[in-house]
Amino acid sequence: MPRIVSNFFIICTNVVVGLLTGHADSPVARILDGMVSAAFPFVVSEALLAEYRAVLVLPKLHGLPEAEMDAIHDGHGPPRD
Image 1 (spheres, rainbow, N blue to C red):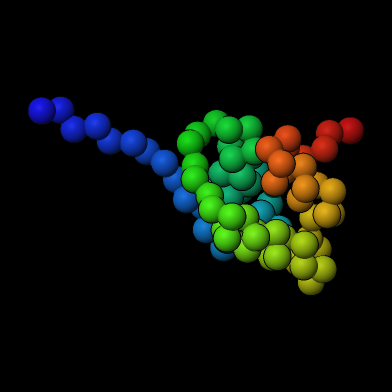
Image 2 (spheres, rainbow, N blue to C red):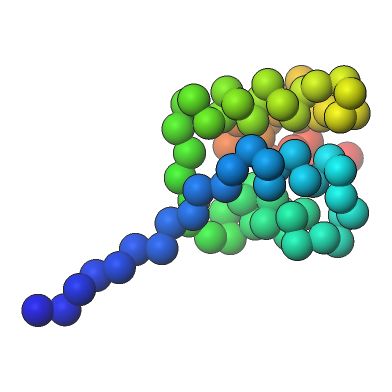
């Protein structure tokens, strides 16, 4: 009987924080761009989303504005100019 394998990814908070501490063209940035654009399947829980938010808005990391976090959390991606 064939085995069905699903490839879903769980992106840990350290990877997400890497965006704030790395370069815009880094592998971490490409992963996060893929998450926002739904380029690959990934899974998150409410607890992981809360952890992302808690870390990404930290001023010491020059965090994302609350409005941008809300847009990402609501599935609309970051606001575009």
